[in-house]
Image (cartoon, rainbow, N blue to C red; front, side, top):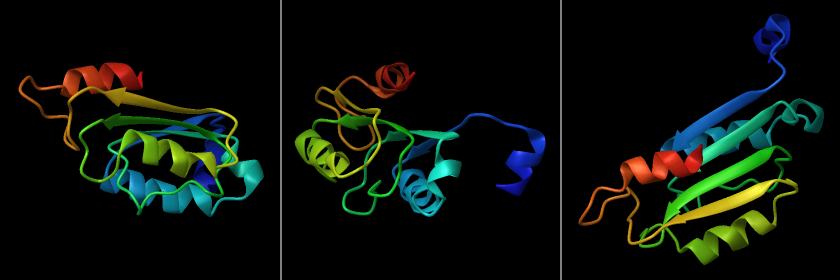
Length: 115
């Protein structure tokens, strides 16, 4: 945080896939609420139950395959309901698994949806 403050960054976006989302959620949940205002996150593949944003006030976007073995889109939405964030969005990728695979690779669709 000290480096971020010293460099004058006003907004910081984390982007994580699965394990990256887990690490980011642990970091973000432990920041002071005032510091959290600078942060937003995009998570590709919400790894339930290891990711949670129960104490995170920043913006959250989750891109999740509706065939993800780590949890359904409905369960991801329920998990995010406990977050105090005012800006939460879950984007479902049809027929995609945790790696956004299906017959046609859906990786590009997932990346486009996150932005």
